[in-house]
Image 1: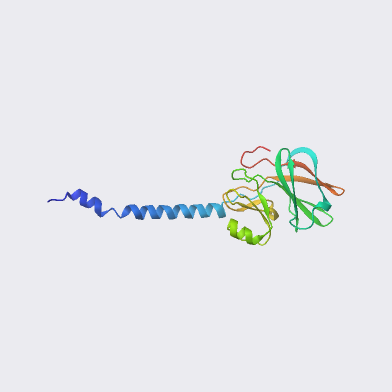
Image 2 (image 1 turned 60 degrees about the vertical axis):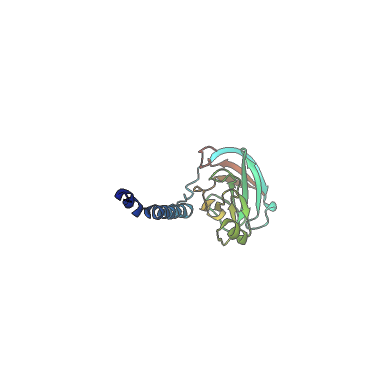
Length: 186
């Protein structure tokens, strides 16, 4: 029985398929790892869209670094946090530092939550941090409130939209909001 020589040649190169598939899978994983850790956009200069003046919280409602208060501003869920150090777009009152961010994740718009327990952050989000962060429970993106809401890990590439704050007496007010980086609308 004669074997067709072209069929024998084809079978001798059959090993190329699994090798190419494996190489492609590793290339995809390396690209994904690069994207979720290195391709993050840093927060730029503030781009606040002016809005109505709205009381957010009394200073007495926040009890120290990383304490927070949720609020809505122009139909956007937001989060006010007291931070241990000032941020360029935050506000400082009597030696205390505050910043506010939209809670809409810049990946798909799920609501981010404050995560105070850094061990929970490491176990659930696969990200080690020295201080509390903001985490998206949908696809596990992590945002650093101390770095102006910058995305530091996960699928989100853009920082959270920032809220413009002002202090008047013992009350913090929202005065503006940056556009959502995903849509450009605020």
